[in-house]
Image (tube, rainbow, N blue to C red; front, side):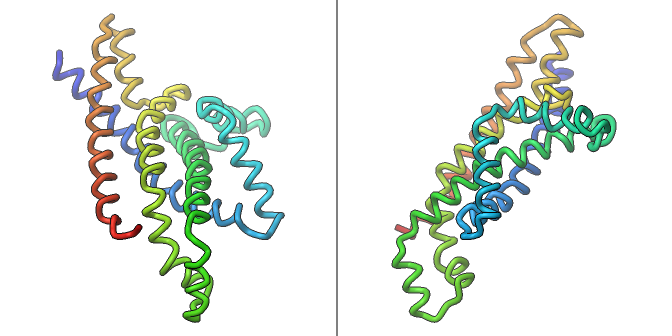
Length: 218
């Protein structure tokens, strides 16, 4: 019985891991571009991005998942995500990427603004372009400063993936709950906690190692 449950939860965890990995892969660079857009002098770019970030940060991720998945059908009269499991996964991935990109954008913005102005001026004295200053002087310092808050968001993302079950994405919590309906046992649902704890622990160790590697920045 334990083996059957473990194999089923592993199958759900692979879906959790897939959603987690793709969300990070897409939202981290998107968040940087959004942060640069918010800090831009172009109001036509910065104002809409500020409004989007305000909306996303001010509403629950579960609500965003429901709006993203069901919204096109309600307002456009058609399903733009596709049918079946793939369609639900794509919709959930879109919602997760948008949500976390907005949070990462604020973290990036705080990190960029925390770099002393003298660093930019030193780059100008050396004859570097704005892009060269950002790439060679600012970016590594920003990465060092944002590792702790980004790590917190990454750990939160591990747990937030469970919300995808509201649109029937078969992640690990869904698999654990299925045993309550099919066999009347609840312990597999608690068993999922071990997967989350182990995965979160590994990510914590990884972030600590990364922070240690960048410790040469003050």
